[in-house]
Amino acid sequence: MRDETISIHAGYDSDPTTKSVAVPIYQTVAYEFDSADHGAALFNLETPGNIYSRLSNPTTAVLEERLAALELGCGALCVGSGMAAVHYAIANLVEAGTNIVTLPQLYGATVTLFEHVFRKQGVDVRFAASDNAADVERLIDENTRAVYCESIGNPAGNIADLEALAEVAHRNGVPLIVDNTIATPILLKPIRYGADIVVHSLTKFIGGHGTTMGGAIVDSGKFPWTEHRKRFAMLTAPEPAYHGVIYTEQYGDSAYIARCRTVCQRNTGSVLSPLSAFLLLQGIETLPLRMERHVKNATRVAGYLGTHPSVEWCQYLADVNDPCHALAKKYLGGRGGSFLTFGLKGGFEAGRKFYDALKLIKRLVNIGDAKSVACHPASTTHRQLTPAELERAGVKPEMIRLSVGIEHMDDIIEDLSQALEAAVPFLTESVIPPRLVAAGF
Ligand SMILES: *Cc1c(COP(=O)(O)O)cnc(C)c1O
Image (tube, rainbow, N blue to C red; front, top):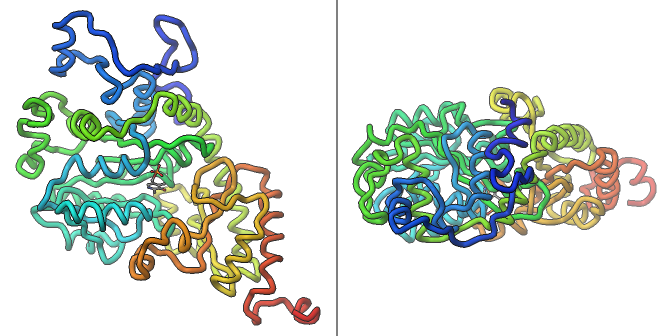
């Protein structure tokens, strides 16, 4: 079926016992065993079923199945936040002495996790010099466990060449992990281009209403773990953290995601609540519709800002002048998403004045909400980064990031217009329109 239908139906038919058409919220911690033998079979992973909600929950399972269907995966694990998903996706494959190789431009908390958490635990994170697959390949060695990237970088808005990265990763015997939060499976399905594992912050577009934190890891089921037995012994040899199970034998294609659940989630406990799973399922039902409107509105806003005399630069992926335009055409079908960045002439000060003058557009650090929101990364999401880290992450000091919502587009433009007016006195002289110079500015 198509995305619009999958988004509404995948993972759930009416409830067999109550006939409830909406997905029930199974607000329970534990599940009763029929007998001691039944309980033992569940613990031995011989019978599928629920034991305890730190391992699985029926409401969350619907969300997992729906996300796996949208992302073309064989299975998914939902967790308490996007950062938990990023963490588990990698923690499932690494140990002290190993490394991962990543593209340089990433979400702020992901950079901090990589630079300051993983490294202290003895897992080296190697940032490639650029987005080029050749620069990534140079850093891969026999201790590398994965290549990591964001399909659309947040906030830099760069697009990863997934096919080239997958090729390099596979040639060197490691999986490609892709954070697909900004693109969503509606605009891009990374597994189609060779990604092995996809992670999401469900907090953003997928939930879509700024109400609920959540994350997901989707397994393509395609990476040949057994061909690289030594490198991936946690999946191909007996696992002491789950009484000696060999994941590739017990779970076949789903080995990776099964271990993620039974080792990472079971023992470190980032769990999505059933109520959150329900709210995120509500969001997913309208994801394809919302993305259509997000893209339409953002395209108009990019056109408006891109030609505005007060705007120094505006980066939108669908723009023919954008450095990622060819990649946007290939991977996003020319759709630029809902996300754009720009800087005012007059730099940091003009940008701050503009930011303070916004009325409809909310000042906050979230994206993917039905509401239009604006953020100044250098003073918020990325403020803990050093100047060098900021530059590598593609964050300029004056940069404003807009996540264009699904309000009426004229109302969005009118708010931008009045905020740009408010910033005019702070623009550099050369760009003040002659009529304002004449009026004494
Ligand atoms: C927001 C975000 C995350 C983290 O997600 P949370 O749900 O806030 O933990 C990770 N990656 C990207 C690209 C994001 O935009």
